[in-house]
Image 1 (cartoon, one colour):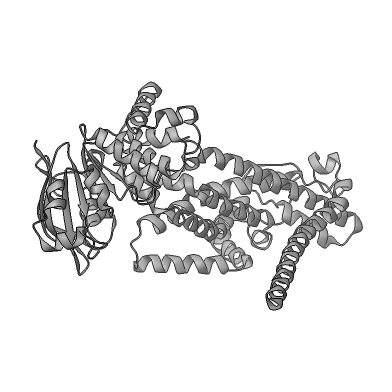
Image 2 (cartoon, rainbow over the protein chains, first blue to last red; image 1 turned 45 degrees about the horizontal axis):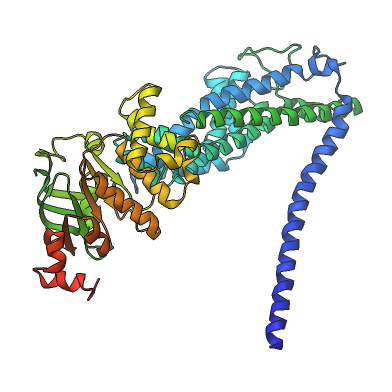
Length: 287
Length: 250
């Protein structure tokens, strides 16, 4: 009897310990995020002014306007290139490729390897392939090319996982009604897999926005006075802008690096939100 | 009554394993035919080969002939056409993760039906045939995944009706359901057999006796006995059938 009570006490103590460590880890994670956010925003937001946001770039304003536009441009065009290729590749791997197929093994090995390569290596590749061989020079286009390749493995693996996690019973239900393979994939499988595919896209956006190493070699560190959508221009993104400002070592430019960081955070929020909304609408088309 | 389906000398292999051995059987129109037998006897395999769902499994090989209205379904018919004419309800309810309405409208849309009025009509008709229109008519736009297991299965039956099939195959459709839901589905099958040819695989011998006209008893890939349900269960000709239905094995 006593032992039973001891046992119960012990179990309760263990449960309490476990519960509190779960809470602790949760709060710690959120706490770190909030700390970083506040640290950057508190230092950055007060420095943001009109000419920094929308003015012409010069050594006085250090305006982030043109970098902002280029960042969004890079995100949109890279995703337009990589998402269709990546999702179709994932459909092939998950739906059409036969099990034990040699080609699939090679593709999968390639994807896993690509996913693990540091971005600076992509940068060197982009510099040789896009900048020199294709003679795009140091330009936004070279940057987009490099980045599209860089995010492809992320999109393929997350889409493949998402497609694979769609229960086979859905496919059977659709095929059993006389629907073709193609219709089953596009009407049943993809909408069901949409949240997983979306997670991969958001991860990719994070990589694009945060990328510096691969872009310094390909789209360059040049900054235009006013925003331009010219793909052939050499132009920096926000992350590079921040890097350049921070490495100048002057107190003023360091402050403006924090201001750039604040804008970067905002851009990420807006783009993620827009992507979620858009994907939600695509997923609901047939509702 | 005419023979809707004819199965002639069918052997089926999964790789090296022979799952069906020289199966011969004719299935009559507007009757309910039940397939019974212990697990792994080939009854579900035969059912699935009737609308070529076995095509999806790698390494399946079929010899012999299966005819639907005297047309060879493996040689002279497209799988999508066959599956429209021969619908299927699976063991576990598998509604799509969409609204109730979209679940039923998916089939007709697949086969080219357009226009809201026409689709509305098909959805209502199909749900009425599955005896669940009154239950769901006020929440057609709600997700089908919010329905109970029994309702989900009847929705799947309604979905099968929606493409206006001639034959409906059911693979242990009530094995995951409670007795009341089971009863509703059994009543429904008896009610609709005047319009369809129904084949049901069941583990439940009472279910076979309650609803089917004919019963086939399978054992290790062979049909041991195929007869009027009443006769098969009261005066089985084969000793193995008798052993099985009296619960001596299986």
